Length: 422
Image 1 (tube, one colour):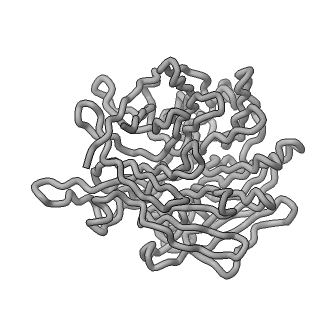
Image 2 (tube, rainbow, N blue to C red):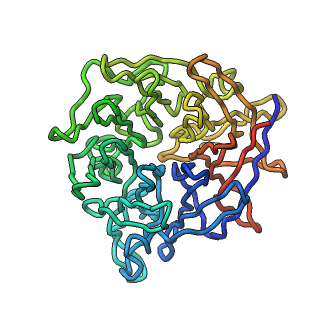
Image 3 (tube, rainbow, N blue to C red):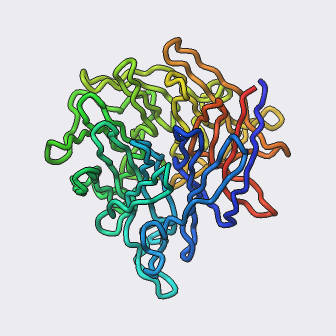
């Protein structure tokens, strides 16, 4: 199997830490991304990359654009959502970048160090592609970060799931109103393991025909919200508790459970295509019937042959259709073999992280012809591996962009990476 080469870019942020989802190709051909921060002093930073010049450029500090530079509070350390483009603007959201270890788990800080104020909450934001102006639209309730977001572009609605409790929130852009529709799954990730702990859904999908938005739970149920109705409704007659996905205890951390990992709307068939993270199974969700159908296992060829799950405990978020709208691109794991033996990681960990080292593979799947292809493992020119890859954007030129860890001046950071297909 051939391998691919990844080109790493240093954007200028020495504190750059793991970013999930937050890279998107805009209609102007440029790539917009956020580099996250684990600092109590410095927040996440937004950048743009222009393929025409092969240059990166700093755009803004997340804390500053939220109007909190002088608040002496825990900064806006992350964005964990894609950018959604509508009417010349990019819409996105911010999240907290630091945690407090409470009872052995990463929690929302209750005791801020250095006399700082506690985290004020994540923000919905917009960025005007023409003028470069930001607008602070709304702040999440109860000091929660915004973990998950999607947009109904046709109707001008933003939807979010907050962290750690898991409130479903709805922002109407034209009315400038924010609604809290309730908790999506028990006490979310602030709950007690074995009791009311539930890992929260990281991806939602809007049915553009009627404006209904859908999300999953770790128990495998699918819920829907419609702006014209009150509250969250369970979708009856369908669930994600499939034998092929594996068996999970939703009350304990360490996996996404029966949640889908990532999902998007596919207009030609009027259905959604999603991926279950741990098992790597691609499925089709028809909300009208409603029905779930397994399509294909999209893991790497070495993973398919080994029959083992990938090493990242939640599965991977680098799952998105390309510019043709028909070809899924998926950045996922592949086992490493040394002297014919598979390199094995930890059996279980209590959070979303790598259980062990593995290769990064690019998989494509052409939906109309059902054509699967593993393009091979991806390496930096020095032979080292991109790791902690949980984002993807496909440029107009067909190049694949992501955010991955690499060594910069003897220090590990996460920054922009470009993968060019031969």
